[in-house]
Image 1 (cartoon, rainbow, N blue to C red):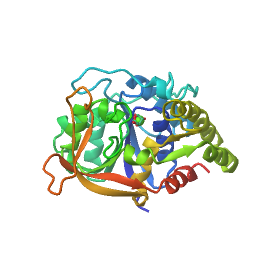
Image 2: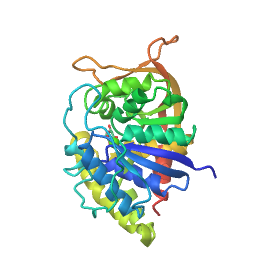
Image 3: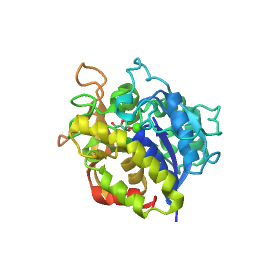
Length: 316
Ligand code: RIB
Ligand code: CA
C-alpha cells in the first residue's frame, strides 16, 4: 500500500493531540514530521505537548518536531484558547516529559526541505493558524508545485463561525497568513466547521473503546478519555452539548487518507482581513460565474459516524 508522506502542523491542543495520535497509528500514514505553531496555546507549549504525545505513542526520537511561529504574520497576537483546551493545552492532563528535543531548524525551513526531498509526494495537514505555511511560501514561492496537497482545518463557509459570528479560530487567528496560503496556487482541501461540527465524538464512543482496545493501546485510550473531559465540558457550556465534542483536527487528518468520507465542492475562496465583525471570514464566491478568490476543494458534507469509526479503529 502506498503510505501518505505527511507533515502535521499543529497548535497542539486537545483535538490536535488526538489527530496526531491517529496519524501515528494509521497504517496509511508515514509521519515525516510535526511542526508547531501558536494558537490554542503558546508555540513553545505546543512543541512540548507534541513531544510528550510522541512519547505516549512510543515514537519518542523517531519523528522530528520543528517549532514554528509564535505570533501572526503581521497583526499582533490576540490571546490563546486555554479556556477551550486547558491551561497546558491538553485538558490539564499531565503526560511524562519527553527526552526528545525539537529540531534547531524552524518549521518553515523544515517544510521547504521536506517538500524538496519528497519531490511532490508531501501532504501537509494544517490544524492551527496558517502562519508556518505562509512563512514557507514567502521563503520558497515555488512550494505549491512541490507539495502534493494541503489539507486545512479551518474556515466556515455555509455555517456560523466559532470565535466570531462568521470566523473560525484557525483562520481568525491569522487572516493574512490564511489568505496568502489560499491564494498561493497550492492544491488545497478546506475542512471547515461545515463538516467538523457534524463530526461529534461522544463519551459512549470512548467507553466502548476502553472496553475493546488491547492492552498496548490502553495508555493512549486513557489519555484521550481524560483530555476529552475538558473539551466536553467546554462544548457543554458553549453549545449545550451533552458529553460530546466536534472532531475538528482528527477529521482533517482522516480525510487525507479516507477521502470518501466527505463530499467536496470546488469554490473560489478568499479570506476577509479587515472589518470589526468579519475579519477571518472565509468568503466563497458561489455565484454562477465566480471571480473573487482562488479555487479550493471545500468539504460540504461528511459521513460522520463512519468518520468516528475509522478514527477510533486504529486505537483498538
Ligand atoms: O476552530 C477549531 C480549530 O481551532 C481546531 O484546530 C482547534 O484545535 C483550534 O486550533
Ligand atoms: Ca488545532
